[in-house]
Length: 449
Ligand SMILES: *Cc1c(COP(=O)(O)O)cnc(C)c1O
Image (cartoon, rainbow, N blue to C red):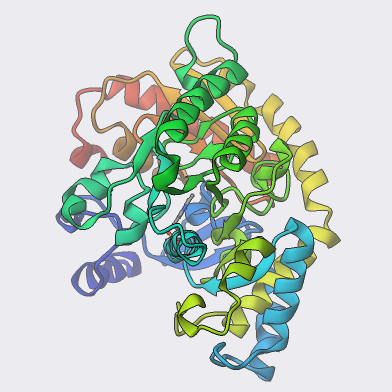
């Protein structure tokens, strides 16, 4: 038995894997990873895989980044963790100061994952209105095909039936408004037209129900889990104005798009707006340690600042503001400065556009699009097992990609080279051909190791 096979079998017996019907792993392989090396993951038999999705969008600078590792090691010798209720420490103070300077928001509240950041923003928004004597503002507005995490509270604003339908009886109802997704353009409509049309639907809802609405939550510029749905910044600008007009909070969930992914440090910058709450996670530690954060405006903070304990935000997680995770996040911010990452990404994205042109022109590729360091397109395919078959075929060619339905996307670590992107392009072209000719083969068969 290869070492890969051994880990695969032990994992299947001992680990309940996320986002998975475990029974499918009777036929579909789990990929055991022994180590990371820059933009690559390496399995126990030495096979290398280009991490084309930055390990679910967290790994900004590749695996095993020396400066982040050094920061964590250094912090480990100083302080591993201290509870943040009644205590504080250097990395959490410095990180909070720097995030505040970068966003114009402050009062950083920490947790360890994205869904918890969503929960915190939703609870804070509701509690803010309660503290202001507006108890009726209890519900939330989210976009069609939104994704904000999968805890019970976050599912109220996550519109992915596969993840939420089963739990519907547990979930509080909110409102969904049309997505400004540019793919929804009617003939003759520009991306901006679609955005403004969607904003009009939002306005109609807010006009009627603003008295019951606490907040609107959005994924700025790119709805990731919806299949990298990209939209015009005009939607955000308009949404900001409407939220101001109708006294509704704007929560920007930049868990996936924050930290340079869309071309600016934060996506909201491209709309020239400041949200009331900003949720961050994923790339915040460059994929090393779990950390999330909610930044909020001064006005929000002041509404909780009171002699009455229950007007305070009595929410906590054991690992809130973990010192090791904060030190990793500080190292990530240092790298943005030291390597001039945003400028470098902008320039390299243009080169990659040219390099990927043969894919863009492929006859079965639709809706080719890019935002910052995210490339996405739909594949014209009749296979119902497209995502699984594509994933399996790419893996054999040394690339890790996970299509969402028939949307293929590249969200590589910022350290990918032209050779890496060439590999990704050529493997994708080869896989499109392969799947075309294998159209009759079932997912289970094509995916056998
Ligand atoms: C991944 C994601 C979340 C949830 O983060 P987890 O750490 O997986 O809980 C929330 N919002 C967006 C936009 C995300 O992409």
